[in-house]
Image (tube, rainbow, N blue to C red; front, side, top):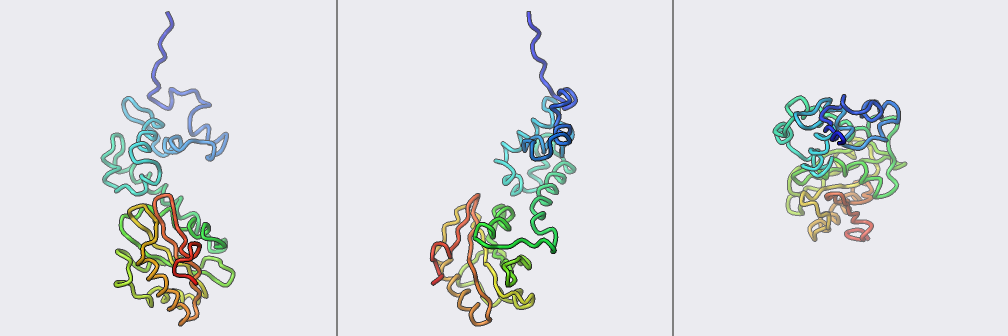
Amino acid sequence: MEESTKPIYRITDMPIDERPRERLARLGAQALTTSELFAILLRVGVTGENAVQVGQRLLKEFNGITGLHRAQFDELCNQRGIGVAKAAQIKAAIELGGRLILESPDERPMVNSPADAAALVAYEMSALEQENLRVILLDTRNRVLGIVEIYKGSVNSSQIHVGEIFKAAIRRNAPALIVVHNHPSGDPTPSPDDVVVTRAIIAAGKLVDVDVLDHMIIGQGRWVSLKERGLGFT
C-alpha cells in the first residue's frame, strides 16, 4: 500500500529548489508567480496553509494585486494569518512598485502616446474609491516634470475651476500637460460632462499658452483617451 502524500504546510517542507526565496535567487524575481512573491513578504504561513497558499488565498479573496491595492488596511489585518505587520508589508511593497516609475528625476519618463500616460497613473488611480483629477506636467520634449493632484471628489463642469489646473504648470514652467481623472465605478466611458470639462480646459490652456495634449479617464483595468476619440478636441 502506497503511503499517501503528506500535505506541505511549511515552506521548509518544500524541496529546496522549489522554495520561493531560493527560486528568486536562482532565476530572478520575474520567474516567480505572484503568490510566491507574496510568500517571500509573508515569510510564514498559518496552521494548514504555507506562505504560498496564504498568498494564493489573498489574491483570490481580493481579486488580484489591484484588489489588494484598493483594500483598506483594516480589511487586510482581518484576514486569517495577516496582522498589522504583514498588512503593512503588503501595502508598502505595492506602494514601492507604484513609485518606481518616477523614482529618479534623471530618468524622467517620456509620454509619446496615451498608453504612456496611462502607464504612469493607472496603477494608482484605478484603486481610488473617489473621483480624483490630476495633471501630468510635461516639458518641451514630453518628459514628465511631475504629476499633481488638483481635485479630490466629483469632477464636473459645475464644480471645477479650470484655472486651478494650470497653476502647477505655470509654477513649473511646463509648456504642456495631460489631464487625468478616474471613474471609481471602473467604467472609463466619458460622460457628456467630461466632454464639457475637456473643452473648458483646452480653452483655458490657450489663454495661458499651455498645450493640453489629452484628457484621459482611468477605469478598472481600462482607460480612455478623449483626444483619440475626438471628444472635446478639434
